[in-house]
Length: 313
Image (tube, rainbow, N blue to C red; front, side, top):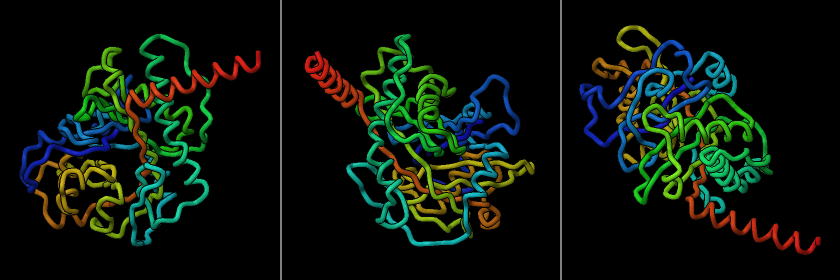
């Protein structure tokens, strides 16, 4: 099942702008399409987490989710509203409540570079028809996650797919590293020739809370997922990761309006429309790695294992 995580091309946001900047997701499963996945949506530009929209569960412009995913979110949400802040930790982006991290969070954040490295290993071996990499050493706890591939110095989106269902990190990152690179329906599959220009981002989603209203979330801190009924009475969902609104320079209302359009809402957006939304907010922890950084780490590992082998011999 697919849905979108990302933004749209910068533009004036009002209730009547063209629906070409947001594509609705199908209300039915399409056979043979990505399973259990959520893809990035929007119009491609040079900002992270933005790309051309798509329709249906495969491209997930509207971010539709299964009943199981919705139940998972509802069971882990609360209606409390608390102040939030963002802090850096060991060079990684941390979006969360306060500056205090649990031991489990600290351990996971400290290993996120290993997750990015693992995604590169998975994709490189897939593209070169090699055996899968050995099991990674980082935690295998279950989390909702996204894997994003960008290309070039301007980091244009090349693929972004993830899931709101908690998945074991080893299998989840392996699946979505490949799915986002090769099966994002908005783009052609990534090729061997492109891998040297890639950057990968891993986003781990946490802290799902049911908001008390469409403005009960904080810019730059929360990702948001909305549920609403379109003008035809069909239930739709759509999501933006925490970075999107601030990257686009939107306020909260502009973000909500953009997300409604992305989810396939075509009628005029009124204050009543916004108030009818059910909004779930969440936080994320993100790390990114370029191909050159991946190769540097790979060479260091090869050198270490070579030295270890000599010592043992």
